[in-house]
Length: 306
Image (cartoon, rainbow, N blue to C red; front, side, top):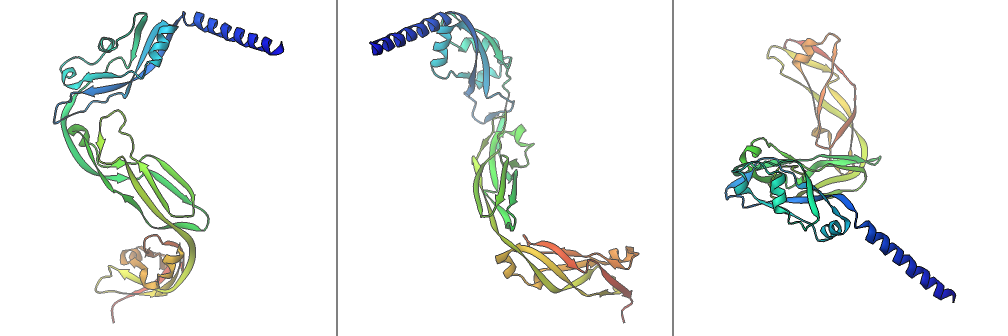
């Protein structure tokens, strides 16, 4: 008897829900639907130069049953002929209403954006470098060895010539890589062209970063050279050699020696100095950080050649 009562309660509940849904769907509602905008019949050798929305926001009014059928009938699409539309006014409400085959009882009441202009230009193609929009940070004791490799490092963009003229490079999508302690090998999509119709030779690029444990090493006796010294002058540095403290990947450090570094100062810096000691510039292999140098500044004596 108790099970029979449960069945009756379930049936009554379902009947009540169906009744409520039936009554509710007879009411009038307003819904907004995003509809992809498609362009067809673009003439050969031409491309769209005007910005276009990827979707149109359409607002419909109607009773619940009919709107439910519209929403569940598959994703609607709006296709327009680019060749025909360029000789007319911009796309507007009436153009969209003509394309929408709505059942009786459903009314299109608004279109956003209100108008869309389609302008064509001659199509072109341009090869541009890829610029990374990425930030990498490393776990304590680790660091990057060598440059970041981007493959491919340039792409071909196809689109309206007037748009291509203003493009000197193309960036990737933004990415942040944190706390790296192992080599990174990732594919990163190219940045979106936004409202412009541009095509790319590849959808993404591959980046590679070599990450190794880092260590510090001291290189003593690195000579200091003075550049641009006039022929009638001679410069003696005190001391003539300095000590460098460098930081790099362990493998890279093991292959380095003092000859891989160039320490210089220039004659103009010496003549402009009033303290009796000048700073030095250091050229180091890629990926090597200069942590310190001893001494920080070198003294000098300027004299005529003997």
